[in-house]
Image 1 (cartoon, rainbow, N blue to C red):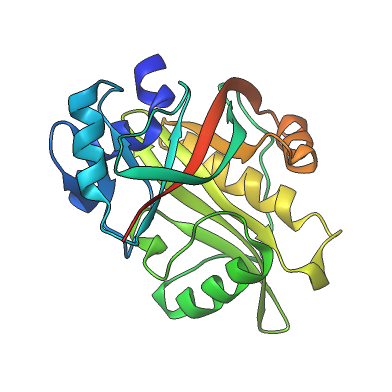
Image 2: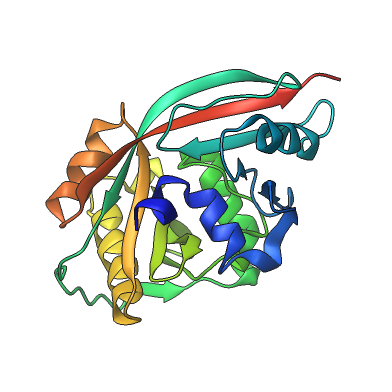
Length: 226
């Protein structure tokens, strides 16, 4: 587990998300239209050099790993932040709510609009390619959603949890987090997630439903000069 989840981007792209990968044995990234994440196999000079070549001039990428982030000369960090990785290894409360519905590609534009308002993390119109998403609609509007992102053998990341400001306070984030986590667990996989360390409200919510801190993480948005 340590290797898989300490470098979650790398381990996902080398295993269950290989179909979405660009790169080689030294560094890989998701296709930019799907997700902005990239990773090197290790932090040695050869791997970092390969990582630098994956990012085009003027383009940005996101790095996420437990170890301190090292960069090749071609890349510079435009922002960095500490994060947390949380995991749910025990049974979670079962929830049932008829309002929860599976989201499809027909909902993609509305999902992107919600993500742009709430900023739960990187989100694209092709995010549905990575895993299932579920949501609650109120009066025909997408009020909240949550879904799956990175996947490794035995693990799936809970991601994209967000509620529209007009519908906050109704417990939709908690409902959908539990619902998606239970969907993951029902497949015999362990749900995990990431959050910025500064987002104490979200961390408190995840702790309250059964997630625990597994590791501190490092996050960096990097760019290659034009």
